[in-house]
Length: 142
Image (cartoon, rainbow, N blue to C red; front, side, top):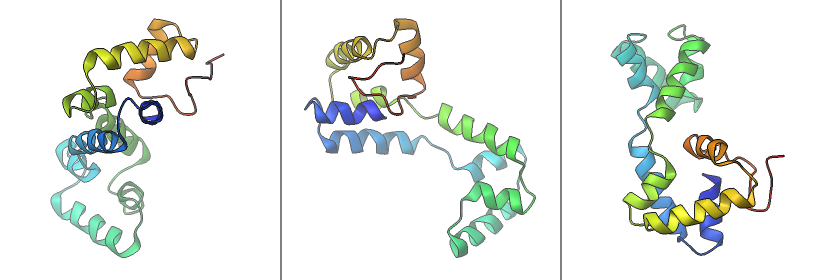
């Protein structure tokens, strides 16, 4: 996601385009409660119990489900990984929502990769997982 801010800073997309793409990503993100039901870890009644407590306390669903004994940390971690895997990449969402043309984005990403001194095979992995925390076009992975 961080490279999205760089796209805004460089004037290639608007802040609204970034928000629209991120909203699109969130529509694909299934709630942990739904994933827990689908995996057979929780019933609908269990999920409602956690949601009611979450409403009262404002605490995260996963932490409450663990405290109530519905989930363990490993199950929650796996569901969070699944949740993230189902979300389309920011690049895909930017193009799909009309925030930027695919060719422009591809060229910018290639230049970005070169600026952070990242081999193509590593960069593909980084972008696929949106693991650009702290990286900007002027920083290096070394």
